[in-house]
Length: 370
Image (tube, rainbow, N blue to C red):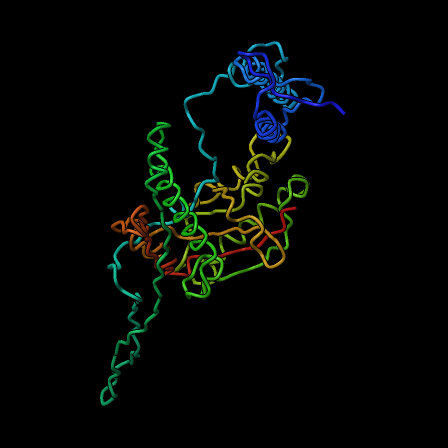
């Protein structure tokens, strides 16, 4: 067993209280992983401590080098990120487009605070008789029918923390502005979902669950292969759908716009109608339509049918026919304090859902697209 003793650096003699000092020094050294069991003497002068410190530093550097995950070698002379260029701009997340405001007119006539909004329609009743004298003359009367819709409020919030704000200031960032943009975006995303799918618990309707909207299932499979194999059949099915409202209402109703899934739209607009022409099936069909000028492709129409079919929505986009009730766009309320160091800002958006006053113009068809 190797015996250790503490030597006074001045006299060169064993230190009187060396045992106690050695015990303390050894415990600290062992705790740091620096105790060398082969050392015969531990000097309490500057050289001894420096030798001890250098040994530990070299071990630390070696341990750090063994954990390097970059391409630098141990002799490169720098930390892993010393030679890295970081761009100043921070990329934002790419998100799918929201098509509710693109396809539908916004109706903002409902005042904020209303819990419901009601559409009224006057219906006239009566008869006309041929007068032959002494015949009772019929009377014409009018009556009002109503359709009531509910209002819902969407809410989210952004929190600020005093210490996080200090960090943002140090880093040259503005996380509050970024969070605010995200809050508005998330509210609009939820509004987009409601415009198409409604919100059943709130009894606010969208396109797919509108109670009086005519719906049909197409027997024609709208895949690129099937459309290419039977272009005449594809055009005939589109004509059937486009003419449905006019034929069944005696010319009273007629759609002027068509929206479908992106893949159905691509299949129609990118499949050649015939070998004799470069025109697509969709272009040839649109040329024969007096009211519909374009086929919109939107992701919201994909897989919305009862068994995963894509949707084709033919509708009249005039405000008196099809609109979306946007009562209040995303709005920030006054910030309130959570505690001495944190604040919360609430954002509110108020909606009344889809309103199809002249729903007879509209038709929702489900087609197999895969």
